Length: 318
Ligand code: AKB
Image 1 (cartoon, rainbow, N blue to C red):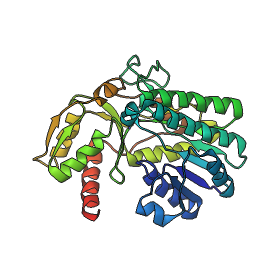
Image 2: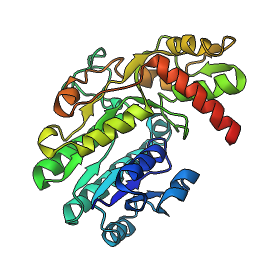
Image 3: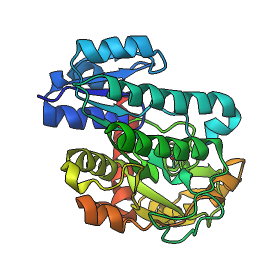
């Protein structure tokens, strides 16, 4: 019987992943935790506790008391926010991961860890188109440096201590259930809220900034598929490339106009533009496809339709 702990259940990924895992493993077997309050759906459907991943003593008690067998550690400071407080972001992103990896080494019941990496591990010297799984990695953001160091630690704990840790290099994630916070790819979420609420959006990236993006449903499916894959199929214990789709703000505006014809977009690039310019425009995910069968259901058209419908309904009920 799996007992699954989610760290960061109130965030963009956690709020949806928790509910999906509860459908598979049973509500009472998925323990949601965060330093902030979770969504109503998460609180109502199963166990939720306020817990700080940096508090290693409470963490170990929680894991032992609840006989946790898998942890999804999703808490992190994202790229934009990390640039505002680099040392704090480094400390949170690295120390929280090391707390979890050490826990997995020490607690026998704890068999599997998921930790998210990001396309931010790549940098300006990386080939930007169809970025390969194995390539030059010289990130120049504190978030990217912390994710690359994290990948190295994950692989180290797997090789040295046999910790079964699995990871994905997420592209920008797009969802409407919980808003993203502090990332460079967040324009692709904000644009839908402003399109529905105001009919216009001022974008903090230039119109031709192409980035890899993924709809949350596809990201959740990929995450669970990787975690459920037999150990023999998981050949990479740093993190897998995952591509999703690639587009720029102008492409997205064209799709939105098909639903909201008067929608207007303007551009005012800020400190996040150089971050985006240092990241890949598209990703080669052939290794994940081959190893554990990565696939997607959403493209820019179906993503736009679903986002406009979802955001409109959310704004009515909130
Ligand atoms: C961010 O923009 O910081 C994140 C990411 C790509 O990891 N969405």
